[in-house]
Amino acid sequence: MSIYTNQMISKINTLGIDKDPKDTKVVVAMSGGVDSSTVAALMKKQGYDVTGITLKLYDNSKENTHSKQCCSGQDIMDAKRVSHKLNIDHKVLYYQSKFKSGVVDNFVESYLSGETPIPCVQCNQTVKFKDLFEESKNLNADALITGHYVKSITENNQTNMYRAIDENRDQSYFLFNTTREQLNFLRFPLGNMMKNETREIAKKLDLNVADKPDSQDICFVPNGDYVSVIQKFRPDAFRKGNIRNLDGKVIGVHDGIVNFTIGQRKGIKIAEKEPLYVIEINSDKNEIIVGPKKKLVKRKIELRDINILTEKKDLDKNIFVKIRSTGKLIKSRLSFSDKGGVVELLEDEYGISPGQACVFYKKDSIGDKLLGGGWIT
Image (tube, rainbow, N blue to C red; front, side):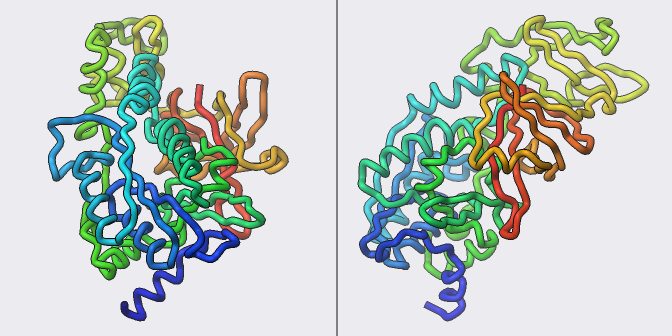
């Protein structure tokens, strides 16, 4: 191996476990992509006792080898090939029914309620970390390793999560619902690396997935066509309804509220002096309310099911929040209520929708620390 590769590998976080690597058993969640495959290879190279686990989450007989979805049949085969090359144990867990009830059904019902769901958060919460955590414990593992781009710092057996150095790849937003117990058991070796470094290591280690494209679609939503998924499970959901303006006047008809999300402009098909956007979705009345873009501005967000990964005193002063995974950090204040919490945004934000996550961060000497988050109501 070249000196260049050794220098890159030395950048990987240590696991913070007080054991010799050869006596440390780790489970690597292997999706079949370049990130998790590289992590498995690095753990093996560093002398850890590695077991790879791949999840079969959904059935799709029409998938092809060029799919940009994760967790497909091709991904399972790729994970098997990497494991064979690395000479590590590999297991496939069949979680289709759990995934259907915990993620897909929630996704469909959320859209029918006029919300904008985030299935990747639900998947981490209900399947990947929950069940993989339990399986790793059953295998007497010392840690569960993933290829997420999240920086983690472990001190005194407690792990804190930070945004990744590669902010374009940062996945901390999707992990806000991790429990403290899970977080202390999880490790994210790629958080201090750029994506191009990961691919370079994969090439140096001669992994068959080194040039594999990143997954871009939600695994059960082919080509981003979420409407087709809803139609498959709930064909009765596409009922015509009224489109109203902000004065309550009916100005058009829609073909189903599932075709719309807050902030959407496309598909309204009504000509006005100003472009119209979806301002509100009323699922009880099967109506959408439209108006000009300026009416999408929000400064106050109500939250439910808040998950806190730090002490509440860290949330007393100004914090930063992210409303979308690719969004910016917004200066905010958080207060708690009997129903959950209220976030006051200190700057304007557009197109906030129920069902989205609002994730909390605080800046310290290490970086942008993940504090937790909640679901927007």
